[in-house]
Amino acid sequence: MGFPRRRYVQEGQEGIYHCFSRCVRRAFLYGFDKATGRDFSHRKAWLLSRLRHLASIFAIDVCAYAIMDNHYHLILRTRPDIAAAWSDHEVAERWLTLYPHQPISQNDSTTQKEIEINALADCPERIALLRQRLSNLSWFMGRLNEYIARVANKEDKVTGKFWEARFKCRALLDEAAIATGMVYVDLNAIRAGRAISPETSDFTSIQERIRAWQKEQTVATTDNSESIRQVQSDINNEAIRTAGITCDNSDRSNEPLSAINHSPDDSNPYPSWLCPIHSDNPQKRGIFRMTATEYFEMVDRSGRMVRSGKRGAIDPELAPILLRIGITPEAWLDTVTHFGSRFHLAVGLLSNLRSFADRIGVRWLKGAKTAQAAFTSPLSQSS
Image (tube, rainbow, N blue to C red):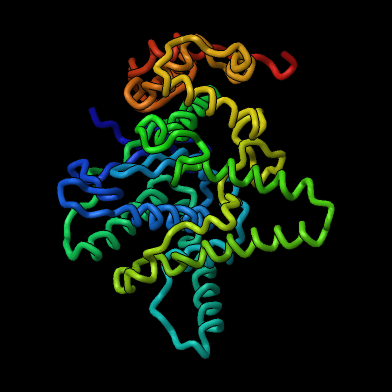
């Protein structure tokens, strides 16, 4: 049964959500399509580049992603607190980056752009609306899916739907739910038989995080300060280069496809645009209390258990991490394996699900029984 998204994705409030979109008719429009004999794998790079670009504009954190052959998963966190701190000028600049006006002559492009930004910034009512949109989940997802549909249809020389429906969404209500959702997303390629390990899972956030961690370890063991500065410069240049890939982003339907038909740059895969696993920076807040290496270990152990088909026999070394965030170890494997089918609108502790149901005005939510078995009250920091 459908449910109005505005009832549980509330404007102006921070929230973390598992979002999902599938291609129309479940066609393999992102990978090798056996029905047509065509390979569309290059389109995964389009989506990843667009995702990076939108993350640089919106006040929305990308916590996890997995781009598959005919669908993709995202874990997103809305950050209205960041949007509220932007100046009117910055809101206008971000919006005009997302929706630039008609091309202007190269000679006065800088002056004209500043004039447009200032003119928009001088409209308080418009700025207030745009500030809300730049932290709005539906606007983020809409700009992602619309763009991909346009360029894919242009390549195929067709019109019509590319996605089977609006994106699906479920709220992640607590740290246990967030951990379950993120591990589910990061293991998607492995569970589908597309990869044998997290570090070989192409077009997933876990692969980016592992590569970034490896690069950080290399930098940490280098005593040459000039080398450290050079790596940091490379990171910044990569972020600028990546953002520039799709920087004219309102509608590139008239642009030659060769200009955007690219592959990810593996030479410097530092994921500066991803939300960190753990961070004390209030502007770039982390997702968990655990470290990145603890999260990697949790994903790796869970992935090996899923791959081998074992049920319930969880390594005791994993239990402290799970208990610390409020997950019952005995139910972890079953919960993360069936995450996509056991829950509907929200995921979390049973008490949080009940509060969520009261807030949206329903008596029952799918997943209550699973939540009762899988999630428990998290241990305190001192435990």
